[in-house]
Amino acid sequence: MALNNPLANVLSAINNNERVSHRELTLHNNSKVIRRVLDILKDQGYVSSFEIVEDGRGGTLKISLAGTINKIGVISPNFPVGKDDFQRFEQRYLPARDFGIIVVSTSKGMMTHSQAKELGIGGRLIAYCY
Image 1: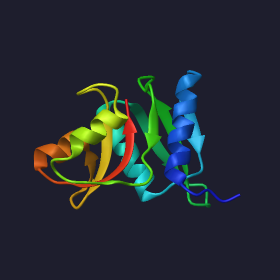
Image 2: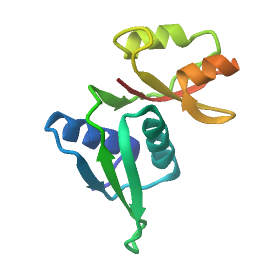
Image 3: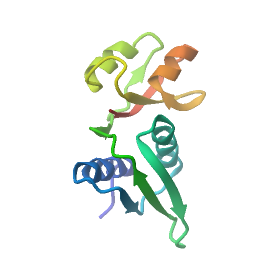
């Protein structure tokens, strides 16, 4: 069966493994978007590490979880957000101010919503994590 949104599948697997206190998971989904979102999660301390293991079929992701995720998910549809409109989406997807991140795809690459606010640019919402 084909997956409609591979990023949603990866984030759902991470959320499920965090809930049952598993510290490592292996997934067969691998793309630039997924790797970039995992890079951001690693930089923010939500994921300990991840590596790509070449298996001849596109690669396998091995993700080590840090145990700090309460909830993670994809934002669909990818709402466009202006440089001054982040507050509305923070209230919708995050439980409190300055708690958690929203991953935003901008013209300067993927980054967190706080980095986009500092640079004064908007983009499209991709995922959230707290």
